[in-house]
Amino acid sequence: MSQHKYLVTGGAGYVGSVVAAHLLEAGHEVTVLDDLSTGFREGVPAGATFIEGRVQDAARWLDASYDGVLHFAAFSQVGESVADPEKYWTNNVGGTMALLAAMRDAGVAKLVFSSTAATYGEPLSTPITEAAPTAPTSPYGASKLAVDHMISGESTAHGLAAVSLRYFNVAGAYGAHGERHDPESHLIPLVLQVARGRRASIAVYGDDYPTPDGTCVRDYIHVADLAEAHLLALDAAEPGQHLICNLGNGNGFSVREVVETVRKVTGHPVPETPAPRRAGDPAVLVASAQTAREKLGWNPSRADLAGIVADAWAFARREEQEA
Ligand SMILES: NC(=O)c1ccc[n+]([C@@H]2O[C@H](COP(=O)([O-])OP(=O)(O)OC[C@H]3O[C@@H](n4cnc5c(N)ncnc54)[C@H](O)[C@@H]3O)[C@@H](O)[C@H]2O)c1
Image (tube, rainbow, N blue to C red; front, side, top):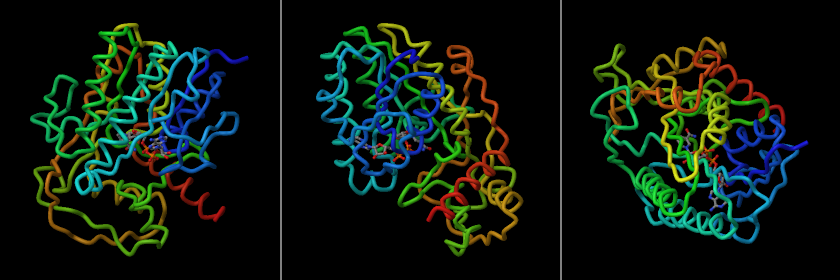
């Protein structure tokens, strides 16, 4: 018997599909709303009701039978957002405005939103807490920050119970649900493409950063740990409050450590190509997840990089076999 009924926007995408699978496993009823702009129909977990449609039209489907919304649907390519900012304002901000209006009209008063570390921009200090200044360096990060502000206003004015989860680098896979962005910009799937022979080498952008091995350090969080935080956030959300929590492991791994781990896990050589630093790439981006631990009771259990890479590799090989 189902416990609650949730709308999952963007549930045909990477993170949304893993969270939808976790909700179903916990006995909830799930409807996925996704326009398949970057997601895949086969990514929607079995057992979920699927609506192919846009968040902008959420009012057509949302009604008082829903207990809450988990909102993943967005565009999320940083580089594309610099080249085509209006695409990001229209979809990420415009889409969420329409969703919030539909929730208000339907009387659905609980929201968990996928925010991002990109709302902070270049950190003044690490690990990054929620009190850090927000100064996004891309329209993508700015669009997500704008949505966070919209949600705060909605909570204050209309009593919405809301949690924004600011993810750092999501990685790994959960069975049949894994990462396949096109174009791919995330390090682990890119390095795995080299291991699979799909890409000749991995570019290492800068090896003279003030880090132990000179390459950039990032915080990788397993997508299943992230999914668990969403279920906890649904329980923790309080009417009239907007809680913001960073989600990361709190320990960073360098680009070179990721490449080396991929070599070990896959047994394949991974050639590197040295490249100049990229503008706007901070040396270290690591989260403080203290708030998530305290307020959500979150306790990530898959922080080990080799395990994260092994799960992503299993998904990549599975995809290859199915192709
Ligand atoms: N993957 C990460 O490392 C990461 C890090 C920080 C934040 N996030 C955020 O998490 C969320 C999910 O990211 P992801 O990596 O799973 O991306 P994804 O592209 O795999 O998933 C996004 C999904 O939303 C759908 N979508 C987009 N616009 C839509 C619209 N207007 N109406 C209906 N569906 C729409 C897409 O078809 C896709 O299935 C995004 O909001 C992203 O900004 C992701």
